[in-house]
Structure formats: structure tokens, C-alpha cells
Image 1 (tube, rainbow, N blue to C red):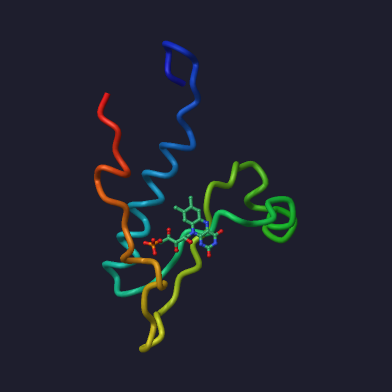
Image 2 (cartoon, rainbow, N blue to C red):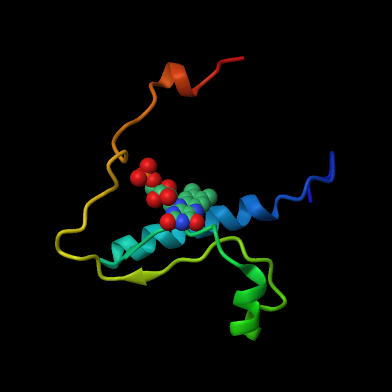
Length: 87
Ligand SMILES: Cc1cc2nc3c(=O)[nH]c(=O)nc-3n(C[C@H](O)[C@H](O)[C@H](O)COP(=O)(O)O)c2cc1C
């Protein structure tokens, strides 16, 4: 909790850890993607060991297919001017 406004930083902290997990997965020569669209009650029913946790992300992990390539829009990026506002 951030003491100034009691903002709960748990999602941010978990996301930082999760990002490092993705980089480690890539370093191991494996592939994954961040899945945030999942049925939490169903997952907890199927995997009761997760019942006491707030789920932030799921990472399916595997060996990418030989012809795997990034999504079509992967390299389309906004310019810095479009993405950043200097205050
Ligand atoms: C917070 C977050 C949630 C995501 N949820 C999903 C998801 O539910 N299903 C999915 O296939 N990909 C999900 N992704 C992965 C994105 O669709 C995308 O593959 C990834 O961000 C890479 O994007 P890029 O190709 O622009 O680099 C998620 C990514 C982020 C950052």
C-alpha cells in the first residue's frame, strides 16, 4: 500500500514480476504470451491450489513452432510524440 493515498500497488508489482518471468521464458528458448482474459472462478475450480490468490496473468509456455512469427501489428508503433505527453 502506498502510504500517501493507500493505493494498492499489488497489480503493478505482480506485473513487474510477470514481465521478468516472460523474459526468463524467452531466455530459455521458450515462447509465451500474457493471457489476461480468463475465467477466474473456473480456473480456481479446476486448480484449487490457486484459490487463495488473486490471479493477474496466465502464461502458457511451450516451444514456438518453427514458422511462428509476431502478430501482424507487432512492429507497428506509435511515435514518441503520439505516445508521450510531457507535462
Ligand atoms: C495486460 C495484458 C493482457 C493480455 N491479455 C491477453 C489475452 O487475454 N489473450 C491473448 O491472447 N493475449 C493477451 N495479451 C498479449 C497481447 O495480445 C500481445 O500479444 C502482446 O502484448 C504482444 O504485443 P505486441 O505484438 O504488440 O508486441 C495480453 C497482454 C497484456 C500486456
